[in-house]
Length: 82
Image 1 (tube, rainbow, N blue to C red):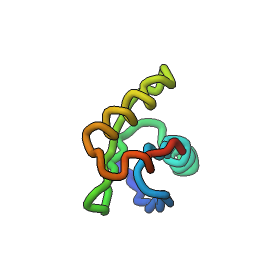
Image 2: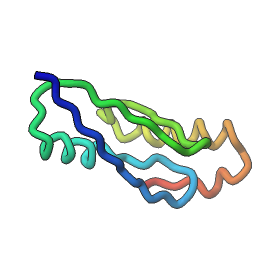
Image 3: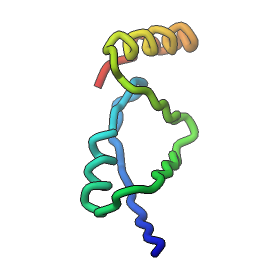
C-alpha cells in the first residue's frame, strides 16, 4: 500500500550561512513510521539553496563558507556558522 505524508519545516535564519536541519527531517521520518521511501524537499525562498553533503569533515563547511564569501563579496563579513 502506498503511504505518503506532507510536513512543513520552518527554518529560522539570521542571514547568510549554512543551516543544518537533517535532525529535524530525521525526527519527522521517525514519527511517520516509514521504513523506506523518498524525501522531497521544496524551498520557497528565492535566494535559498539546498546543499546536500555528508559532513564527514567539519573543514568542508568552512571551505564552503569561504567559497561563498569569495563568490559574493557584498556582506561576506556577515557569513556565520549556525
